[in-house]
Each structure stands twice: as structure tokens, then as C-alpha cells.
Image 1 (cartoon, rainbow, N blue to C red):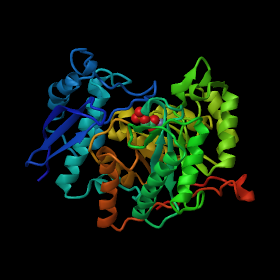
Image 2 (tube, helix red, strand yellow; image 1 turned 90 degrees about the horizontal axis):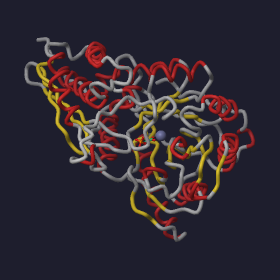
Image 3 (spheres, rainbow, N blue to C red; image 1 turned 120 degrees about the vertical axis):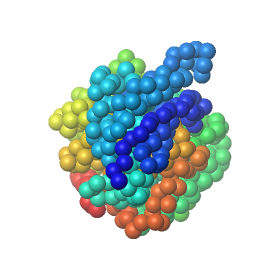
Length: 442
Ligand code: PGA
Ligand code: ZN
């Protein structure tokens, strides 16, 4: 019996920062029902699709999502009733059409994404297959390398320092679970080192990593490299570092303001700073190294470092097929961060992932700093075969739901662990000129 969408409901719930967000529930004929919960960013890109908020200062400081809930129940639900949940492109296309704006500002990307993901989940349940298998289609599914947040600054940690995330990517292990175990050891070692250095810990940051006060941004790299060693691993060989500069958020009047270091940095100096770090530390990936609309600067950055670093566009590309296309055409960056709620449907998310892979760009599947216990992203990362996932640190349930779901998928399947190819690190004299090659297609 072919099932159809019977009804769609929504609910205002809370995210990991205590802000409202939306949960959508899709019920199919025959009684199958599934929900999906939408995340929310803090260091958002200017070109993201619109997250619809009520703007009523009397509730949640204006952040309520009752309008989005109403849009799901009164506009989207009736329009989708009777349609085929397995035809994701048609479902998403219908919602895009109903919205009718380029940035999903009428119905809200939060309303649309909730339904998009809940439909996929319901369809997988109806087929009796795991979500990742339903999503994968012809793609070569694999378990991704986790890019784990260890130290946080910027908007996620009270701006103690400006660069937003310093992450450990344990890529030199045979399995996902061994990599996760290594990340936990590094996370613990980082805390010990911060204590020994007398750094004031301002608590745990929005993504569960440590939010210390540091004398300079570079100190985060020193601490993280030392933590990798203290945990018993070889930096560069087993574990590499990823940085999310999120530089649009300290870009002021054409320059970067490093308030914690009391200095201003020009575009050229920023490129030099990043190049210098990549020489001296086992850095493999730099996200948003320059501001979101500095296309010319990004071209320079890519020419200078693109052959030995993963240069990842988050606020730059905002998971938008048009912006990614511009990047590919102009030789900007070599990887795209994928956040579903930046664009608002699963279909467009896969469009970005597939186009990236076709153009030789890598994709990193990412959570938002405001998350829920929903583990959809784990299945998306596996299904896409993208090979890397970035969902925060190894504390807080909103983060662990994803890591734990990956453990479950690893346990219950015989999927391969993605082999991430990392150029030799600076200690090796051959490092320069080594090309960053895409991971083996699995
Ligand atoms: P956001 O942060 O969810 O606050 O945008 C995550 C990131 O910048 O990668
Ligand atoms: Zn980012």
C-alpha cells in the first residue's frame, strides 16, 4: 500500500540555549509518524535563509516561533496532504513554491526545514530502512571523521578571544569509535593544560567546548597541540587541527579587530597570520578565514593556501547553491560547510553536497551552535558520504545525540570509515606543494 502524507503539525520547543525553535511532525496514512527539530545559529551569515521569529518582546525576548508553527499547520500542512513522502524533491519544491521568496522569508526556513526533515524520516520509517539509507540514494555512504570542538571563543564564548572554534580532527584511526575516543582524551587533556597554565575558565561554551580566557588567539593553538600530545597522539599524523575563524563577526570597516590582542589586522595580514599558523601548527582546515563578502580576498587566500589546507566556506557559502557556484567558478575555497537551516530544505542541501563533490570540493556536515537532541545530522553525514562532521564538543546531549547516533550506525552496519586524505604536515620538508586530494570515493 502506497502511503501518503496525512497531516503535518508543529510545536514550539526549546533549543540548547533556551531559545524557542520548531519541531514538526508528519503523519502518513497507515499511522506512521515522525518528527524533526530545527537548530538555530548565533554567528549567522548575512546571506542565510530567514529564521522566522515572532518579534513579540513579551515572549522569549521576541524569539518565539508561533508564526512559523502556524505556517506549518495552516499553509504547508494542507498543501502537502495527499502527497507522496518518498518524493522529497516534490515535497520541498511545493514548499519553496508556497513560500515564493528567495530567502524563505514568508513561511520561514525554520518552518520549511522542520517539515522537510520530518517527511524524510517518516518516509524512511514507512520503507522500514534506517534514515541514512533512505537519504543516501546512489551516494557512497560512509562514517564521517568527527571534527570536534575543544576550545571556543567568539560569539559562542563571550568573546574571550576572537577566533570561534579550535577543533581536533582525529583522522588517523581505523574506526569512527576510536576517533571519538581520541577526541574525548584530547578534550580532557586540554582542561588539564588550561588549569596548569592558570587560564580562567569561563565555563563551557555554546557547543560544549571549553571557553577559557586566553592572552592571544594563538595560545589556543598551543594548548590544543599540547593537548593532542598529552593525550598520547601524534599531532599531524593521527590528529589534525581545524579552525573556524568565523571572521565576519570581528570584521569592522574592512579590517579584523582582535580585541583580546588589542590590534587590527588587514586582509593581507590575516592571510599571513593564517599561513604562519599553518606553518607552525598541525592545521589542516580553516573555515571562514576571511569575511563573508570578501570574494577577492578569498581568491587570494585560496591561491596562497588552497593546495595544502582545506579552506571551508560557512558564512561565505551559507549552503546556498548559487553562492557555491560563484565560488567554484572563481576559484574560491575548496570545501563547503553544510548547515541545512541556512538554506531550508533537504533537497537544496543535497544539491550543494552533490555539486561540491562534482567540482572536487569537500563538504563538511555541520550542526548549529543552538541545537536540539535531534540526531538527523548523523544520518545525513553518513548518507552523503561527505566524510567529515562538525557538531561541537563531546559534552552536552545536544552534541552527543549526533555522536551517539554515529556509534549506533557504526555498530549496526558494515559501512566503511571515511579515509580523509591530509597533506603532510609542516614538520615534513616535503609538505609544501603537496596537493590536497579528495578522500577516496567509498
Ligand atoms: P553558528 O556557529 O551555528 O552560531 O553559526 C557554527 C559555525 O559557525 O560553524
Ligand atoms: Zn562557522
